[in-house]
Amino acid sequence: MSMKRGLLASGVLSLGFVLAACGSDEDAGTDNGAADGDGDETYELRFATEEYEGQLQYEYAREFAELLEEKTDGRITTSVYEFGGLGSEVDQFEMIQNGGVEFAIVSPGFTGTTVREGQLFALQFLFSDDEDVNYQVLNESEALNEDLAAKYEERNVKPLAFWSEGGMQWTGNRELREPSDFEGFRMRTQESSLILRSYEAYGADPTPLSWAELYSSLQLGNVDGQENPIFFIEDANFHEVQDHMTISDHNIYVAMTTVNADFYNDLPDDLRQAVDETVDEMRPAAQEMQLEMNEELLTAIEEDDANPTEIYTLSEEERNAFRELAIPMQDYFRDDVGEDGAAILDKLLEEIEEAEGN
Image 1: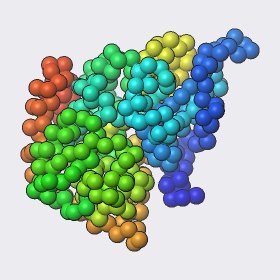
Image 2: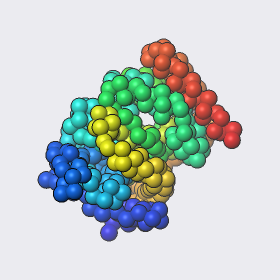
Image 3: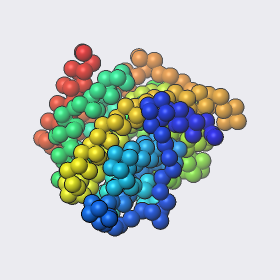
């Protein structure tokens, strides 16, 4: 068993869950609502993720599927798809909208052209430096779980949970310690006008790119660097083609567990309750998994003698230099997105401040 597989297994078992292999592609059904012998409806569902097997989103989805099947006594079975199995990140968001899949883990950065308010997750230095505060805010925030969620539901996508995959860090083919280091730096980003503007404020040359193309683009020098949580950097082997990593924690990578709204609303009450219970039980599981994976895989990068990586942690003074350039992006967001988005951001800022005070 690889270190990552062993890590995931130990993390899940410590929470009282057991991971099992997901169904094959052939098991992924479109025969939702078929009657069984007792007259109860059974469902064969699809769950799309933006990561590969062994990475956080996929393992979260696999555990979610196992737990939901257990809670429904087998009336709901779910096939989990890794990245690329159902198209690009944008393709998968379209599929959750039109019912091509029932569940999906969605990164708001890939939805910014459709649900523009969701771009707020691209604001750097928005969330707390305290993991516990962010966990509380993502789970309890009215701004996110009610106001922002309503914007997605207008597109037939219901966010069930917002959760963190960990702090975002920079990798590059040169040191990234101060804003001037980004001058002319070709930074790979998600397709979000706010992310583009944020890196332009540092002097970078942001380049939107699907992560499926990222390794080869870094290797060939088509882009100079990228941002991701530590576990993803190591698992995607970006440290093999990047000499430097900066522990910047300039943002957290927020994922959304989503369901097609029509499907969810049409479920029998008992099955909809089982979905809700599964979502709630997965909140601490996701947090435990990301904390453990990011810690252990940072060590893996540090100890990879075959691919030496210079790792530098920004001082608070250095982070503040970036923060000063990043905070004005909040006004850009307010002006660009409009009154509803501005109200969501302002409420979220108040909630973060209150959670930090407590």
